[in-house]
Image 1 (tube, helix red, strand yellow):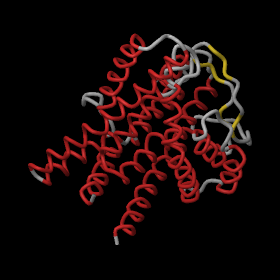
Image 2 (image 1 turned 120 degrees about the horizontal axis):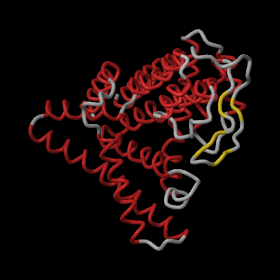
Image 3 (image 1 turned 90 degrees about the vertical axis):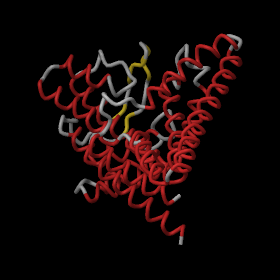
Amino acid sequence: MEWSAFSLVAGFIIDLLIGDPHSIPHPVVAMGKLIAALEQMLRKLFPKTEKGEIAAGAVLWIAVVSVCTVLPYLVLLLCALISPWLRLAVESIMCWQILATKCLKDESMKVYKALKTGDLNQSRTAVSMIVGRDTTRLDDAGVTRAAVETVAENTSDGVIAPLFFLLLGGAPLGFCYKAINTMDSMLGYKEPPYKNIGLVPAKMDDVANFIPSRIAALLMLAAGFFGGMDVKNGWKIFRRDRRNHASPNSAQTESVCAGLLGVQLAGDAWYHGVLHRKPHIGDAHREIRHEDIPAACRLLYLTAVFALLLGLLVRACMMH
């Protein structure tokens, strides 16, 4: 376990320094290919009925989680037999690849830079890289809002939740979470053809994120305090709007972010050509502006650092 803690700190620092260079192969890409291949295979094996597709999704979930947890465990076990330093190095790389702090900031700042040029089509293209909704109908404010929402939501999904599982069980449990979250991203939609096969992956993602998302919200409030933001309003909107989402988890950090910034997030959105009616999160004390994207990124970084420090402190206390 001690090696996992050192590896986590090293991986966290590497992530902040270099993020996810496109030139380096990423394990999430391999996860995505595994999920896609199993989806095609299981759709052929199981009956094309509601129950059959739900069962296929359950089998897919078990298979992907098993592979993505056991494989890194075996790799680390082999490395430890060769040298504890090799294990430390390999697990540090694994932890780096599980975290997505700098990547989330970099991708959202691409949206910010595109917005500053005034090119709406370029802005829509940039934001389409980080959101699941249709972006062709978004205006300038809609693009900005989508980017801020993504940073707020993924502060939990992409940073705090992975940190939570890494602290609990090192890289194997971190990859387990990453697999759960990736399946939800690929299959967890309410429209055909994903509605049934994605049911179990979506529900299990809700379970996995239930505790981390609430921890993330409280840590984001602390980050807002140190960032000089309106913590009183952040707490107010969190208590009022944290359930204003179809997911039990997504609005936890979105509500805090909306309150801290004093803007209104969420609302209706298009997915796969279907309009989804959604409640708003936050109050529109002012119009959302481009500068809210880097402000959300500052919240992301502060929250991530607080999470790491708190996690290491709790871990140290439990070991003594």
